[in-house]
Length: 197
Image 1 (cartoon, rainbow, N blue to C red):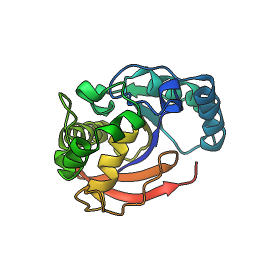
Image 2: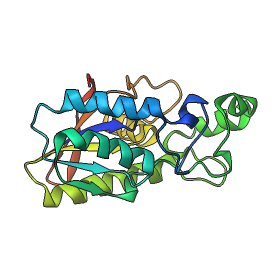
Image 3: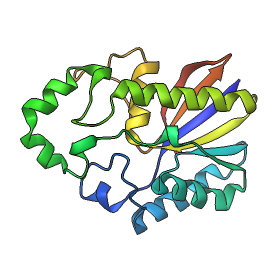
């Protein structure tokens, strides 16, 4: 069994502006770096064998800052990158609200939700699951910190909770927490959502 402790990267300027980042490579802001250093203190008690991170710089920098305390091997997998939001990338949440009809239509696709010219939630889920299952083959028995993105974590939380990711589904997922996922015999199972960091 491989135990994954999954978390979102620290804050960026685009996060502060409530702007859709998608797979745009936006770096951490000073607040995000401070968040990562604080998380390092709470994660530094031992027990983690390595870090697996998205290759986008906001995740990689979060992992590197945490690892200044942990001092464990760091691995990168681009399949843990954020959902590609296509032509909606760069829009603010307020601008998305102005497109309410189209956004709502997509939301009722559940895992089929696909921003215009972008990637579906299903595609995000499958690549993230593939990354975690493949990594577990070489890291059986280890506890792994995974630094990834809000969209990836939402897909995993909904799928592993048995939710169809519809607008009225009530999966209690909080972005700045740890989420434990177990991989046993090439199957992922939800351990616990929203653990304190």
